[in-house]
Length: 204
Image (cartoon, rainbow, N blue to C red):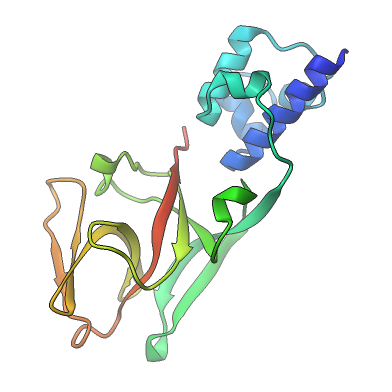
């Protein structure tokens, strides 16, 4: 097999890992077995244009990236947390999900500390965030008004737009079916902003 398909395979592998997909998951999305995906990535078999378009759609990238835009080999494993809660004394406890790392391009996490969460529910659909999406969060307790942030409320982590006013803040959903939630940090002790949303990756 010529070098074209070997280079093509490297790009499929790169973007698959960047999206957090396993060989089996990508195979299911495009209707082939994981062994076929492995062969694509190793450049062992040819990939048709139609198949490449299917792969690109499944990985949520432009097909032109698979055809040859130069990519960096600089990637990093970012932890995926299954749950986040406030412990005694206001400490935030992060519990890693089993197999909990997502391989991501290093330039996504160039400054600061990052982690992934999995979106739950439909409260942020207006921001194109859906159930099951991977959410890349930058660790911080400070966000600007209107930014989407991960907030721990009691023992639940929620994703909302945050608006501050006179020392208190309001959590606003991107779904009219959900009312804004108002908090005063001086009285509501178990509430903590833990990070702001940097990127949402759609899981098909």
